[in-house]
Length: 367
Ligand code: MUC
Ligand code: MG
Image (cartoon, rainbow, N blue to C red; front, side, top):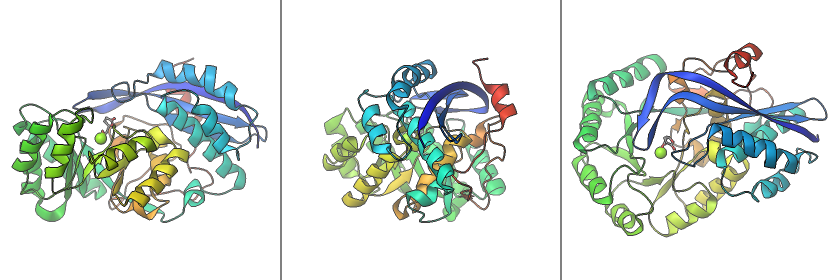
């Protein structure tokens, strides 16, 4: 059960439809596949998506920090020493996606070694999650057409609408068009990725007060400390902190400081080990949790599904598990299938996916 080697492999898979939002846009999945090798021949796998606009990480940076700092720090430890791994990784500041991929690959290797699914090892609450689809910036008619396709093809009935543009009417028109088209057939919430000021957010939310929104997420920057408190106090829906809560300490600060009333857990930035801490903290604080998406590929989505389905609190709301649908291809031997609006987690040992060696060969960029 000893870790013998950690590999960080860059790959690039283009998006068919780029995702655009207030803090950036993604055209190509330039991710890093992380493989943790062990002395028994078992290999654990996970992926790290670089998100410079959210955490400052780049593809090259993720590979370098894993190759030069994380791998030497953990080679020789066993798969059971996950808290030792966490403590050694924590000596380096930041780098959440790189740390998380290493952590989840270790869990994958442990599950494969023990012949157990990671979702069961983490909590085993359910075997499925409802799926929420993220609608990136486009014309209202295009966003409605995309939602129609998601409802008809995949049975998805929860949508997170990206907002944060100027004038705010650009976005409120989209949300209104969606509500008018689907009436109470769908759940709707909005995510501003810090694009608006607190005052703009308040105005937009007032304009949408008759549209039955489920949540509002990160509409303005948490650095606008008093502005955000002022906004959150005025809202009559939970305000989700996403990029402002990359660590459990951030969750405590934002929630006790009243700048948020709900959180997004993303396994891409807190892995399984820290996501578990964040989950327990959220349970103790009594706040809603939504499983978020870091614009993950299918490997990352399988990780979010394994974690989200493990607990009651993380599987209560639909999880954001469909961004991979916008990619032109992926790395798995058996693609994830969304049916009737749900993703079912695999019962295979580990996180529950296999990498197709031909696909990895085609998309890796280091050969
Ligand atoms: C989201 O929920 O914000 C876009 C930026 C990011 O950090 O994550 C995605 C989705
Ligand atoms: Mg968000």
